[in-house]
Length: 270
Image (cartoon, one colour):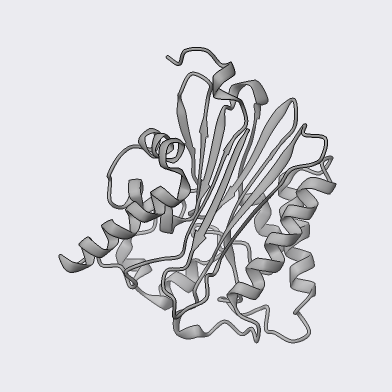
């Protein structure tokens, strides 16, 4: 089995708001991984005295612990309880009713000898690859359905945040967990998985350098560092040409790549 993780800040002047980790029990029969992309509040206004990195580290830690220790608990319940626990740590000091209270996108993958479970909330990406090489993207595309001109308005975006007809992120309300994209796949049908924040997935979904299958092949060959390096080069070149209208040239970029089956034991690929 092969596991690789990289997380790189968008700029040295700002803290990395992404968070990622994975856990492998001593039994070797299972594990879990968590990737969060903290949402940068416009003008720094979120009603919280702690900040987004503080929030993602606590939410991520709770998700990793509960996904491993409560294997009887569905991932939606793991997310709901993790959100509640995190909110409890700062509800006495911060305004959790603020529409931009610290929040994050979420990807959780949990596996054992029988199955691979997944949960995706908001615009981070999960890729799964079968033993025959078929790559599937698991996406929560609600944010993509909103017109770009709407998202350019802070007030219009706030009106859609964690609302029906809009999009959902993990913030202070455990109820958003039911809106996550979830599923379970037999372990024998998953060779590898990759979880990416949108600062890394833009190799495919923004710059269109290749398909999701091409991205997975790149991760196998060059690893997460290779992918992020390519994204950074594309961003810099794009900025020199006038850019794609992004409000920051580089975003925090995080990738966790996990091979759950030994490719040497699979035989020839289709």
